Amino acid sequence: MKTLRLAVDPFHLETARAQEAIGQAAKILQAGGLVALPTETVYGLGANALDEAAVARIFAAKQRPAWDPVIVHIADRKMLDGLVTDIPEAASRLMAAFWPGPLTLLLPRSTAVPDAVTAGRPLVGVRMPAHPVAFELIYQAGVPIAAPSANTFGHISPTTAAHVLEDLDGRIDAVLDAGPAEHGVESTVVDPCRSPMMIYRPGAITAFQIQQTAGAVESFRAGGPLDSQPREALPAPGVGLRHYAPRARLVLVEGSFASLAQQLAETALRFSGEKLGLMLPEGIPAPAAAAAVFPWGRWLAPDEMARDLYSGLRALDAEGCTVILCPLPPAEGIGAAIVDRLRKAARSKKE
Image (cartoon, rainbow, N blue to C red; front, side, top):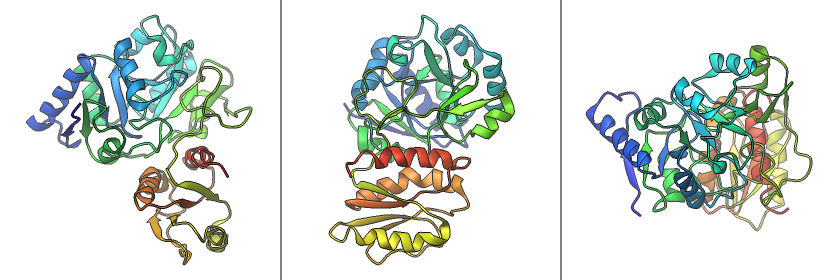
């Protein structure tokens, strides 16, 4: 299969070139094919969510196990009504506040949703993306789009079309290239059907924002070690999984900003025989042992660090690093999402 790379300027969707690219991608989806699409979080691998065979192609292309559910993306209320049987009051408040945007809600599924989408679970994850290209594509295709991240299973999520092609070139029909993703980490996943509500995956929409909008919320805590092969279907995408992992061994370094330079230098000494990569926030000197350094934004600007997280890990992998050192930022606001992704990625390699 030859993967088409269709360039789209997200700020000029009215142009003939943009409409031609999006229209071509929409026809691929309508025919049961796979299209990687930009969203404001990461690039997703899309298929018609109501077409069981098309959804199966997502799992095959990603080498994704059947026990890991996928999120469905919509463009309007009519699509939502076809997917779910009930919308709790808390969900309505969250939709009003954060849709379109990086928030996924777990809602009771209708019979139209194939089992593969939810891993057989009774709730389906749904969100309305804010990215103009994703929104236009869903609208033109006229069907809800199932779209997990567009990478091979367990690997670093893609925030550019080039990242998608690194993993999936020749395995999917097309990728819509609209430049880098805005947020850089996947959507917040919330179950509003329970009280208190449950955050299964942190993201750009924070626990504080959810609580202020719709009431009490708590964060999911896995009961045991992270698994690569859980014994049952997961309650939400990515829960309890080793995931987001570079090829290199990822080593996390915890501490205050003032202490990080010393801690990084001391940790680097443990890996003298390795090609050492470093995710380095602005204002921290790099240890002499670092063979490759990725400038990782400002410590007090976690939005910047989230946006560049996956790009940095991929860049250091591309440099051939065998170990990557990464400071762990405070788990506040979107920092909670960064910490969640890094802990899962770091635990994907044996220590």
